[in-house]
Image (cartoon, rainbow, N blue to C red; front, side, top):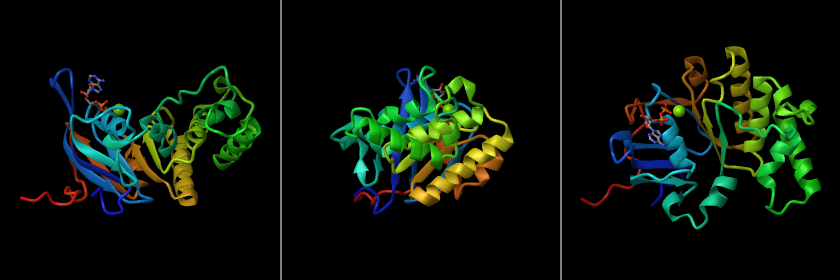
Length: 235
Ligand SMILES: Nc1ncnc2c1ncn2[C@@H]1O[C@H](COP(=O)(O)OP(=O)(O)O)[C@@H](O)[C@H]1O
Ligand SMILES: [Mg+2]
């Protein structure tokens, strides 16, 4: 039982660092439904990035389990395939390759996955169009504004058609008007593609644009939806 149709199920997840001296997540449970746009807020050091890293299978929980699209991450046959194709990541800083132009950056996640060079280029151009940045396809990242770079980073995150987008403070380095445009872009991509989005932000106005907000503090989720997310264990 991995969540009865839920897109993401986080079930009693704990994670510590430094031999248990740092408790980043303490018994966290929640679920996201397909197509949810949920914001995750809370103080710095509260465990937000740790949680995204676990859902993205960049790290493993010490206890508890996580399922995405009905698949338990600890049982993934091919975790790198999951990271490449099932989830898309967007970070505060864009992590674009400075020596490649926008179009080439968006093609990177498709390399070695089957599409020909021409197919990759066409797909990357389509994604840049979806993100309203196709007019800068040939631009090098360092000639783009912060908001433009984030559009390219979002296009790259979508390269392999992920069902889940994990965005860790994507507007954290942008002014509020530009940040608002990036959130509007995410909302329109969600509507067009039916993706589920989990967005970390410390901006209240940004958080309010989501369907609902989860707050995480000292490794615990507050003001969350129902905390029992898995089938009750037999007593
Ligand atoms: N790789 C790591 N090694 C040691 N401590 C870590 C590591 N990653 C996160 N932490 C610690 O875990 C806690 C939660 O961090 P993080 O998830 O980054 O919080 P947030 O994203 O909410 O600011 C913090 O105390 C942080 O210092
Ligand atoms: Mg963080």
